[in-house]
Length: 443
Image (tube, rainbow, N blue to C red; front, side, top):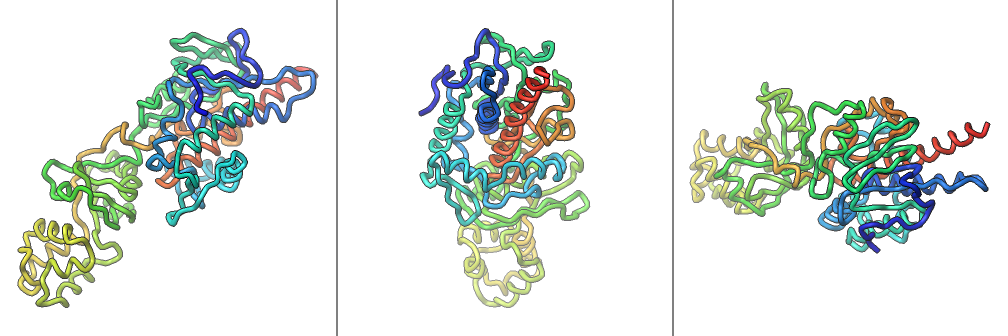
């Protein structure tokens, strides 16, 4: 059911190089915006009035790359509970105003109507019951066709210019005019999918500002060559990652599944911390990260626990609460003989071990880059967008949706929910604006 390279079937035809609404980008937000723009235009159309043409353009040869890789190829469509507190970037109130227009219940209903049932897992994430992201992508492409919107790809947009009361959209394949533009071209994460930051430059050229920091988010972090944690590659534990200021003040703590890798650290706790580490480091270069291997237990409690174990073997004691592989690595890092008893450690070695258990320093050297990032932190500030319509306050007739906005959610389906909600608002609002303009023109 996947679209071909020039799928422009259904709906009002795009004639003479003109579309009423042009959606730039056919990822999650762009597909949703095009679907709802066409649905809304059809629902509000008057007899005898020419139907509204909606055209989605995307530079990728294959549509939906980011949808297909999401959730390990299963596509984490949303989360059972979504709040503005799950997002960073623009103000919580602005994010909330968009999210409440198309909430989780409507997302579940939308996909159910397309015969895609979602299941809730213990983490609260919602996946298709097929455990196959193709189910989600094929449903969206089917809904796009049924809505009457058209899709052309590969058709890369490199420039959007104001042209009288409308716009000219152009790229290597040519140019076309349109009355309204929905810019849903993504941020900079996973650039091979087409989300390479070009949309941010288009918005900037039109007069928008872009946040000073544009950094990878939900991205693994790297540790120095030879660091002992890198020797634990493949080990997954429940741990807490703590961000501290240069004055050691705890700024943020995130607990969850943590993966040791051949390059450093990954897993949900690390991915969620990555954007906060980037931003904290920019404001306070002396900030640090540390890892608690036994979260919820203070250093004092850990010390008391070890003291109480007296003649027991140190590795055996630790093995009761963590994998033996990790226990031995911690002992080696604390310069503790693996065959020693706790009583033989002495105060200095015991406290060195406790210090690592409670807060192993993480000398992060960087991140795995845009190709490994799931989302972009930064973008067009929502202050420059009317969140009631997702229309630009800078450029009338331009709407924005999805990752191009300065909104990034934590791991768990939150970024998809932002794509659905912002795409819905942008699409419906663009269609309603055209209808209102037509009515005003008749009066």
